[in-house]
Image (cartoon, rainbow, N blue to C red):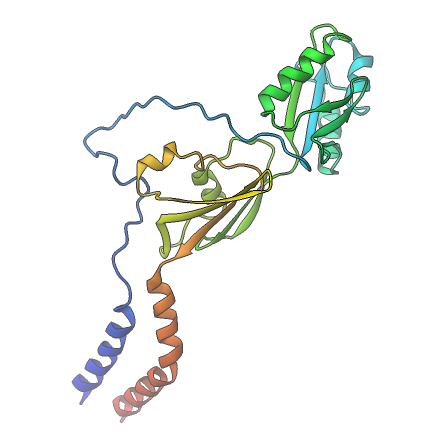
Amino acid sequence: MRISIYCIILLFMTASCGFLRTRNIVYFSDLPKDKPIITEKIEQDKGPVIKPEDLLSITVITLNPESNMLFNMGILQPLGGSGNSNVRQQQQGNNEAGQGYLVDDQGYIEFPVLGRVKLAGLTREEANNKLTADLKEYLQDPIVKVRYLNFRVTVIGEVGSPTIITAMDDNLNVIEALGMAGDMTLYGKREDVLIIREENGIRTMARLNLNDSKSLESPFFHLHQNDVVYVEPDKAKVAGTGFIRRNWGFAVGIISTALLLFTR
């Protein structure tokens, strides 16, 4: 009798697990194991460009403290950014408060002395160069640093902790974003990661196979402002969850009967 009970329980467990299949959960598993060092030339990605509604932190550093105060919204920024901790904490606090330069619908910002400056369509580096060149008419050897205050990426689906990532740096790739979201679960489809991108009124959707090292060359591997990374669940999880829901009462009945017979 006990053997029969064990067989029934084992049969149920096997049926439940039968929906699971072997999945490759190794990133870039196509890389050769016999080469400990692999060197490849990286194609330079232009990276994300500034768009309307982006919020930018623009710091101007000069040898003139008064100029620093004027161009940094009253925040004194010493040359080289190596000032005392009080200054650095004050600047960080203002950034966290949401102060910055908002890019309007036409792609312009309002900047002290320069007035309206169009930055939309430029990368951060290009914006640095443009503002530096414009400010040289008024300042001696200015140093300009442009950063995002609202660079956000959303990671959802089969990850440890679905989240919205807010980064000061726009150099964020898919692997880093997944790491910040707790990495994929075992049910996450590494071979089919969906990237949703909206730019200039156009929505683009692309799928990356993170088992394949060629995904590193995709223009969607490096994320842009407001990208959404969606990790689709394996069909085994969907099917397995449905099976358990449909057969939960049956399972409880088998286990209850088995325990009753076992304790007699």
